[in-house]
Image (cartoon, rainbow over all chains, first blue to last red):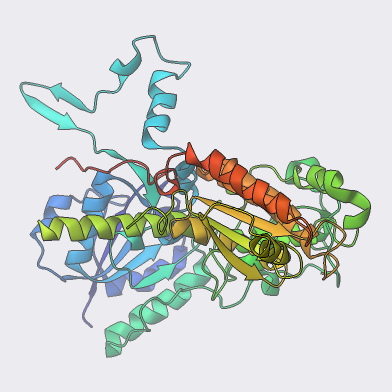
Length: 341
Length: 150
């Protein structure tokens, strides 16, 4: 049996996705025979230099975790795209931006200033803290990669073949992934490009909580304020749960086992582009429904003000579509203008 | 392009079929003057305006969005404009977090007979947005040119 060459590359990641591979336990045993590991800094001391020496398309499959946050991640993404046949965005960050994309509501300068200039644990030397280049030994300079102004998913930078959402992905998805890999080894067949390796319904289909026929929210509560009833739909209890707009495939672990609302880590439900705005619209529709006349303008304003931080609530794991579109448009303009020169 | 054909700021206006667009008709018939910055779009009800439309408008280059409907309690579809009101409160909050100023999104209730109100609202909105930079440069995360080290 020919072994397939696998690489696990990373953008701005926390390590959780890599841990999810290690946590496969006994599922790793058949992998050992099938896979020849080319790059995985989490597991062993691989160097990017060695990857650069490989021929183009020599790596069969690259799993990429983490979004594009610094200039180095752009380089890594392009390098692995060039060297590999199949590029898989692994984890919510690589697929949609993930938790790091919450920083999109601040510019890079604001973030750096907050941390290194106005940070309360810093002395008062101000801007001097930010030294991207430093010298060590004689004349050997090290430069930190530049922090980009935005934090966008992998597919804004390079072409991505498959998506494995999840924060982190669950063993169930690995079963599908292993099927795909073993089929690829045997026959060379692959599913169509752009396939999302997860469920094909909204999360509510998987979640076994009893859903009332009509859901109306008369008071918004945040998860820490109440001890939710484990049997009844969380939305009916006034907690914002992103289940209706989120893809299934995780087994509803949060809502069923942990009794906390879905935060949307599996990304938009099938055939939805921008789940956040859809969910915002839905929440607004069911808030105070049928009592609007009674509540009046002031009452409704007070009710909607109970929704704290819509960006962090509805877009916790996915970059807003408008941001992505404008970013891509700008990139194309830049590309065209550099060509015409 | 002459300024009259490409006025700045550009504002997309969603008028509901039953009240606001009738008001716009009346304003036209009675030869009231209002700024050419508006691109009016007639919707069946202000409740038809999905939050997505508003962000799409900004993505396509609009500098402001006006949503106008019937007065509260007078909606042709009973609760359509209440839904608009609730959504727009959240949309304004979300837009603010994304770097779009609150003044760029405006919700007004304009009845058929209130052509004068329409003229005041449009003039007021143009005056307010004139002093703001174009929206496309405002969105956080796309504000500055990105340069890599090499």
